[in-house]
Length: 511
Image (tube, rainbow, N blue to C red):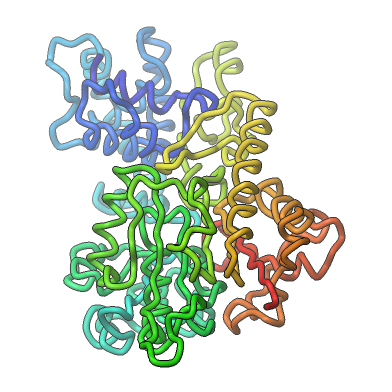
């Protein structure tokens, strides 16, 4: 199969048959004949240019003259014919190449007319316009957490971010400010920067001094607030890849040397026992990633990685965990709030002639899904590795989310049973109430919660950055309980705050 047939198959793939973001469609395939990077570049660039190429193809009439061409194939081939330095990447005698090149005079003429209609003097100016138009979709800032285990915010402002101009709000970045930086008002040591700079090539990133982490992903550790507890160990139940684990380590590091655990190790005559963070990851490959992240961040003196250990199989009453006072739970979920999970670049398809045109398209720009008006995220799920899991129907989606919610509730109830536990934070990157508020209500009604006196940590009790966050839980999904809804924190992607969709809540027990 040629590069162009593979690209056509990717762009034509319905969401119900494994569609997702363009990158996941390509890099998730195991049987590609073409290099994935080349395939991705062709598909992405064709989508960018498809509005103009649609005009050229329709005006030239080649779809009516070349019956072997489909609308998607014609876009891909004409893109390379007109815009690629090497032209169409097929032998000169290949039928697909010939189907385009025998109309080269007409195609070049229509391409020039399309440029002149835009009042642009050169192809270079046209390229600049197309690139600018391709960036007019939702802009997401680059969130970076300063790893205080290795550096300080001040040091990074004077070095890594020295060339960036300070702005007062993330909305300035969303509005298109270039090389701008904003100190986040909710999460200490977190900054938002203009997208486009590759920080993975900086010394700070390579040394673990800065960590690329979405703002919402920083909420769980901050809401848990382990440093305010008088000692005690911490559990991260589903820890890989390690961003939240290392954030926990940064938060507890300032108090770890002076606090004793609840297990009595700091009794009279004995020095206080250093605090520990138990990080569980049942998948050994992901646990290896977690180990590397912890070491790079300089958190290995605090974190004990349980590689291959399933948190649900851990005995809460074991001596090893008698000092655990705080637990962070961020389990597998539908992933419906993740930025970019459902994003496909827009593809403008050229019309066929007559009745065929009416059947094939409604002449409106649309994404290549099985339903151009559907919201792709409604049917997007991800597995433990963050890979898309396709569902083909509404009932299948509901069944999958119900199964996830049952697993999530089991995890919460297990955490609530740790004898010395005083705080438990539960979070998901899902927008579904079934995985969020409904899990919270079920946990509060459970025997273990009632027996041990667990309740939600009210908004007024939360750390300032979390207390001040304006978007709270869904009152309706909380059965009308405004106090429970107020304790829950939500974020929504593309709402002007520059974050992904997220949910987090804290349970506390008065002891």
